Image (cartoon, rainbow, N blue to C red):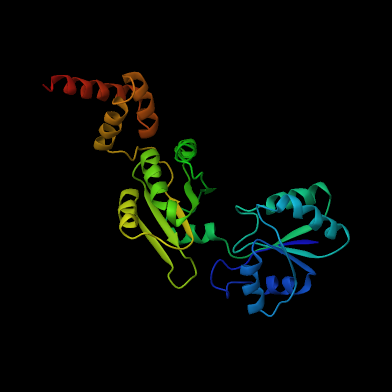
Length: 277
């Protein structure tokens, strides 16, 4: 049997009694990083054979784990923290178990995205977990464009070094929505910094963040979150590079305004520019 066991995302006390029992009973534990997992296991006096299983070796290690399961071994899979399969290679292990008709189950527990939703104060009724977006700006912006009209709270993983860049791209594509940066959850310096994206950008430009981060951003509404000043700024930027038609298409999509409205505003801007001596 394969057990997908949730582990603490920070505070080692955040583990279920059932998780401790399973980790004590299995023969083998597959984990993301043996150094991190050893701290948890040592804390609870659990001594087991550890198999590193992560993005870089998953294709080589997965057949070994499947072989052990076929031999009747009980195997637990844990990540560095939180629910397995969320932004890690455990998904392919589960798919392989399904294909091979091998039994598996989930031992539920801590989850960073769910905790961030609760901390954020933003609507939990509908939410979309987006994981890590690309580190490349063009791909990141494209991903944000694909979800800009979704009327659900958006949840992202992000690294401290890329946070400000991500927030700037989110502001450009999504508008000046409310957001919350949840940092170091369950740990000593836990923080949930809430505000508009512009305020968050200003804060973290002045106070560079550290630790693990989850960003929560409010979903799309029927009313554009871009002000008239935002609309003009976007148009002026686009008109400097593109034709009027191309600029209108781009800005109407970003600002979620009708093309007719944006076109009229573009003509006004062009007319004002023509009158400047």
